[in-house]
Image (tube, rainbow, N blue to C red):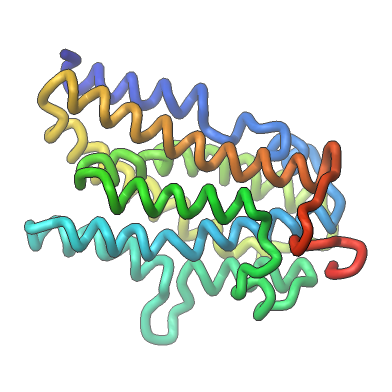
Length: 242
């Protein structure tokens, strides 16, 4: 059995080793070596993930009995869905995609997404739906590592892609404070609730699974749009759709 601080260290080690910031596709993006069509494919497929985040958070809310927990967790849904006249993360991602030359309705429909992308994001919803509340919360801890990825990605894109502006990347700026806020809250809960060796192992495995889900999405993009370039039937075709 680990102490709470030892559990946190173990969780952070998972992210340091397995977060998708280490994926070859992500490294190509930061190096400025992706074509515009490949960037379009990334934005279009990533929207599938953005679109299920409020759904998985709603599932987590449905499992919680504590009003204080629900008040804190529902901030995540507002962040992504928006509120009143303030656009949320989903709308900002659509803006990112259209700024890259994609059609908003096509992106929102998800009909041109890779099959593996859809399988991966559905696996995340199923994990949160089928497992206990703590597992869903632990799976969200990839947000511990999100600010590092954003801190690398945004300056690299602005420097290396002349068609990308700060307005294009408006999605990422609020995430620099939203993600740490959410991650700190979730981490505190996991450290408090994981009071047995079995619970601690389950929390670590949940984070590993989430890292695998994010990695699998980039695997699919790399296979289809970088090498060997096998685009499945019905998926986004840069030559004709881009």
